[in-house]
Image (cartoon, rainbow, N blue to C red; front, side):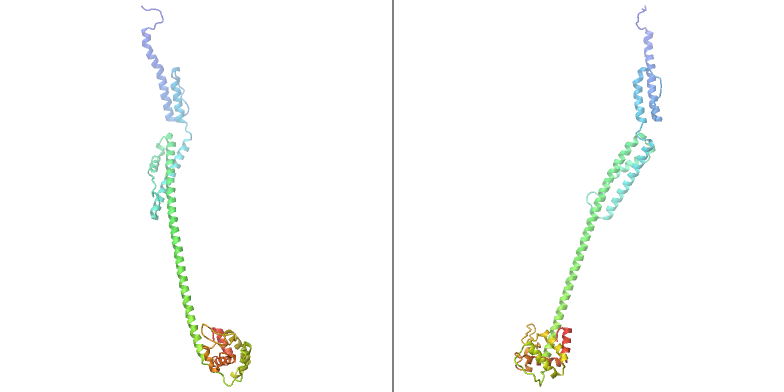
Length: 339
């Protein structure tokens, strides 16, 4: 018998699973619709679907997923533009790396460290982003960041290689400049030595010519005849003033006027200072007229060593025979330095 108590009947037990499935099914269907709408449309709105109270937690999770997927930090156009810019920068970095590597090879200089830049990873990332249209928008920011990091690595390696190449070029330039300066200094030193040698040779040749001229002049001077018939006699006063007075008195004996006296004074001032004992240790010339040797003046008198008058007489005879006059002798002395 069936009692009228609250015990469930068999029919109730059979209906319970069916009713429970009716409650769960709308909840699952609602979640699927929410996810599908999010994936296709990308909207932040949640579909308003009547559901049973027991399905509320499931729908809350669906709304969270929908908001996360459909609310990017930047607009789609900004994300795509950032990717395009990153790809362009990466391609420029690959080109710059290739350029620097080629420059290193062409320079043929000893560059420290690795002389290449590895761009394989960067080129792979560029290839992966070439067609951003087929990549889900949600993935673009992360891929773009990785591309940017790889680009920065390549740029750093490229800058380092360029710096090392520039250092090698600077070193080579410094070495070439040092070699150039050394060569110029060596050439200058050689030229200076050559000029010095030429100057020494010229000085030696001039000295030899002067010595030969002096010897010739002295020989002519030693053979000059003494004037005859001179009435000027030695007084024993051998001072320069007495010697000059005696010379002035003798000018007429050789046919000269007093206009020749100043030239004679200048000439023998230069040769001996009118000192009858003047002696040139270099050539051996002696006396007021600097006869070479002094003994040649013996033709004018045996007292040639002690008499200024005898020396003057011999000197005037030498001037007359070789230059014609005291002014002629003085002019020659001024021209070449000797008479």
